[in-house]
Length: 139
Image (cartoon, rainbow, N blue to C red; front, side, top):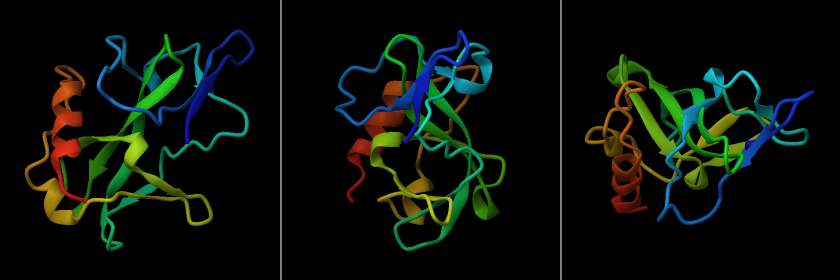
């Protein structure tokens, strides 16, 4: 999904696929880390649509929350559309399936699951809350 690597002198990232029991305390939006980029051979889902499991569009992936220490991406930051306009969500990367051919990310959740989802805020990120919410949603 998204592995980070060093571009000439820049680390690169890959997508974290494990248990989120311990989320690194150094997560940061990828677009704020000048010395990091997506690793060669990995797909960068920024700009892709996020669809629910029934194919309904939830929004666009605008950023990735990554750890400079582990060089892994943990969350996709999604800008909502339609009834979710002006809302951002942090969705665990490990839960998404990337449709590389259509440049879509498919979540295992339904549209209604986003109604109660915690809103992502770059100023006050609540990483454990985001993960706890999505982990508790039935798939």
